[in-house]
Image (tube, rainbow over all chains, first blue to last red; front, side):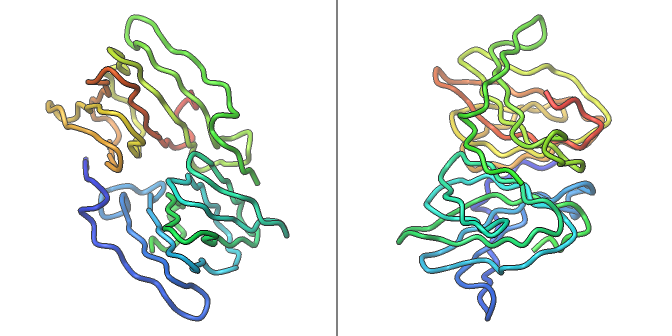
Length: 116
Length: 116
């Protein structure tokens, strides 16, 4: 079992050609014995975005705070605290921050996905 | 795909001998094509609790707000916004509100669990 505040887990910074200004944390994963799905927390800074890509696993997302958007099926959708997003497998998608403050969300994935 | 604010989903009230003052919502589930895990949001009112039980599936929990506690392995653990909890399969557990305000959390389960 595990009971942990997310702030106790050091973030992993991700910043390259396809990902900008993203910090990720694995909250619950295979190392904890969670073999069916993995809970991650991501924070996108101002101007930041995740890659525009697709893969053969789904995302289940919960928006924690800030203002962002998700691109799914050729449209951008506005996101705020309390919005849930289901991205099915093999659908192109991207998340981006559209404000000057951090945009944070949980993103859960099945075991065939990298954890971070 | 699905993009929805949780407040658009009517809550299901649960109140019986083993569960008190709980409202649950299925945010992402089998009806959405989510076959690997289900995202639910629960709100426990003042004095409320979930059943003290165990089952052969795990929980992945994220605390959204309020003050609560979880009983796992014979101990109560304090919970606040930003705490993640992993309850492994077959471990007795219970959640309860310990304040006068609502206590809210996400609870994700694999497909062998009832969705609500």
